[in-house]
Every structure is written in C-alpha cells, then in structure tokens.
Amino acid sequence: MNGPEENISVARIQPLVSIRGLVRIFSRGPGFMGREAEISAVRGVSLDIAPGETLGLVGESGCGKSTLGRVAVGLLEPTEGEVYIRGRPLWDRKAHADYRAFRRSLAGDVQMIFQDPYSSLNPRMSIGEAVGEALRCSGALRGEKLAAPIVRERVRVMLEKVGLEAGAARRAPHEFSGGQRQRVAIARALVSSPSFVVCDEPTSALDASVQSQILNLLRDMQDELGPAYLFISHDLEVVRHMSDRVAVMRDGVVVEEGDAEAVFSVPVHPYTRMLLEAVPGSGRAKPGAPPQTA
Ligand SMILES: Nc1ncnc2c1ncn2[C@@H]1O[C@H](COP(=O)(O)OP(=O)(O)O)[C@@H](O)[C@H]1O
Ligand SMILES: [Mg+2]
Image (cartoon, rainbow, N blue to C red; front, side, top):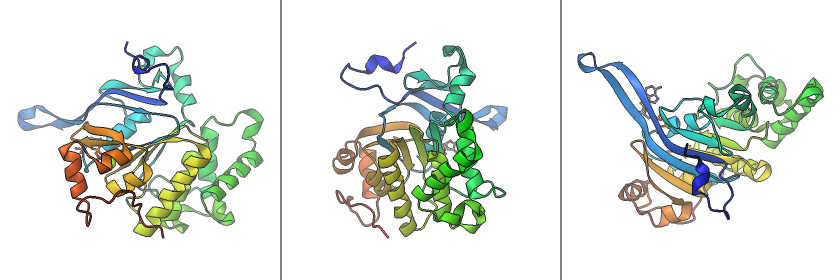
C-alpha cells in the first residue's frame, strides 16, 4: 500500500493530514432510461496539511470543497483514495487492529466548523451544555477529570477565550446573534484542543463586519491553541487573509496549489487568474490587503 511517507524527505516533518487520490462519487438515483445518474464531486485530489498551518481551499460553488472537507474529517466515506492522519489511514478499517478505538481517538482531535452555526446547535441545550458535551464526548478528558466542576471550568475558560460574556453558558442558542453563535461553534470545535479543524465557509452567512471579527478569532485561536485549518471558502479575499498555502479547486480537481501570496500575486493557472479577475473592484486583487476590521 502506498502511504504518504514515501514522498517525504528526511528533512521535512510528517504532514498532519495527507489526502491521497481522493475520489467521491454521488449517486443521483435512476436517471435517463433508468440508468444510474452519478456525479463526481471530487475526482482525484491529493493535498498535505502540516501541523499548525492553514491550507485555504477556494473555488466556485459546487466544485467539491465541502465534499472534500467532510471526507477529510471522517464524516463522509471516499469512493477511492485515502486520508492519513499522522500517517494512519482514516478510512481503511483493515489497516487498524482496533479501528473503532482509532476513530474514537480522533473525536476530539479532528473537528469541523460549518457555515450555519444555528443548525449545528441543539436548540434545547444551553450554550454551556453544548460546549460541555463536546468536551466530554471528545475523549480529551479521562476519569476524574470528567467531573462536572472540571468540565464546567474548562467550558467557562473556552467561552471567555471566544469572547462571550460570563452569563452566556446558561443561555440558549436562540438568544444569540449569528456571529455569537459562530463563536459558540468555535468554542465547541476547539474545546478539546484538536490538531486539525475543517472550517467550511465559517463566515459566509455573516455580515461583513462580523465576518472579520470571526476570522480574526479563528486566527487568534490558532496562535493560542495551534490547530491546523483546512479553510474552505468561495471568497478569495477571505482565503488570502487566512491562509499560509492555497489550493484552487475546479470541477472536483485541484488546478493550482502553492504559497498563498504566490498564488494570489502570480497565479499560474488560467482558472486562478479568472477567479482573481472576477473579485469585485479589484481588476486584480491588491497584494497584502486584508479585509477591513470592524
Ligand atoms: N449528498 C450529496 N448527494 C448528491 N450530490 C451531492 C451531495 N453532496 C454534494 N453533491 C454534489 O457534489 C458536487 C459538489 O458539491 P460540494 O462539495 O457541496 O461543493 P462546494 O462545497 O464546492 O459548493 C455538487 O454538484 C453537489 O450537488
Ligand atoms: Mg460547500
């Protein structure tokens, strides 16, 4: 079996996440003349993500970004290919003596933040319960550390880190604005100190001013807690602001990949140039201009 190890020179650290030859085909049920209609959402993608870095994944709606992200965190099975976390295959059951224990061990280590924070929160749970549940289910705490006062204190600290006021823990999701709910979603995802987080359009549903606050929060949390991000967005300026490296996706394949500043200032692939020229008011996006902060 081809592991990700073979591409790595001695000098380089092992990638945290290695995606190899990933293909995901969806069945659309019987199509024309009863033939099975299929859609190839991801058609052979290989990417590496180093510990603590942000890989931006950009491309137009429908190009397969979310599908790739869901496969990478273990939510959606690939049709072909593999995802390695620290060199261990995420989807190959036969490669692990105890596959279930391996997958359980990833619960707190691999997380996802979605676009719509409301649908990812249980309306009946208080914010404190929701973040506490995420912590307890993550496996990050064991034995005596699972005691209610210890969990409550970790939740309190986490809610403070994401900028929610002290009383937030007792309140319900509907009492919060979209931006505050995304802060809760970030607290839930990061409370177990994961090493890999897929952020799938985390600010696309928010107003521009709130958007930059949430982006800055994600960056601050990365500085403090050190997770690697796969940061998915259709918005090139947002991806530029967030990413160390960028992969440009089109129709299920990655057409260009490289250092973020290089890709945005000297795009090689015609499709990347076309995307950049389509950014409103840019002609070509200006180098080094982050989105305005509120
Ligand atoms: N569960 C699904 N069933 C069928 N088709 C799907 C499913 N999820 C995504 N697709 C299709 O796969 C393609 C890629 O979708 P997606 O990964 O959501 O793209 P993006 O996130 O870049 O907008 C789209 O054509 C979409 O309609
Ligand atoms: Mg998507």
